[in-house]
Image (cartoon, rainbow over all chains, first blue to last red; front, top):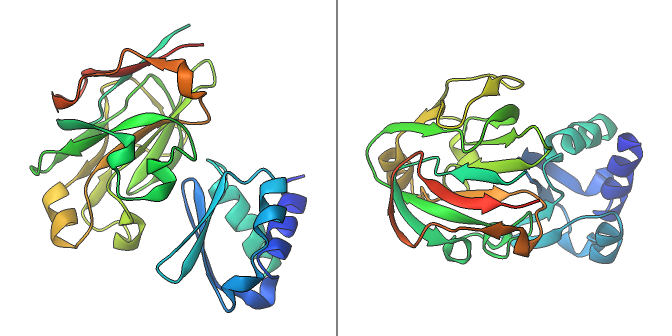
Length: 78
Length: 151
């Protein structure tokens, strides 16, 4: 279920308390986090994430073209 | 069926690896090529026949009849422009023909805002060896073949 995947992705970036801002962009979730070190890249990859890119103070999680849907599912959980 | 993927913009064909963004340069969402557009304002066109399944002011995905989906991204980090200088001509869910205008934009305004206007054209989730018939690096006109996506 998509909601479950969203919940697992949220857990792998440190949970709702760690999210300052989350924005989808076509294929990726741009996450501004309180603490980047809480990102569990292995867990994200196990969820089928294509890659994790850290740049410019944000963590970008490359989830594929369903990024918009996943982001709105995660926002429902915040 | 082999899918003929057309250039969404007039400009210069460059390898995806030249795109100043690791997600595209490392082909994390799929292989493809990029077009460095001419600076004149104009329309970006659909690369294939299909349905616009995702539409942002600065990027879109067209899914073809066989499920193959092509992503066109107008510039890098242009999500931060919040749609300014971009004018979508279609809505999400609309069917388009290859070559049909999808988004009007002004690459010079993107450059002026400090972003690269380069346009990655990505065969989403394609195998690296599924693409052939690449346009040679150099000038390209919107609607010219960029590559073939083989089944």
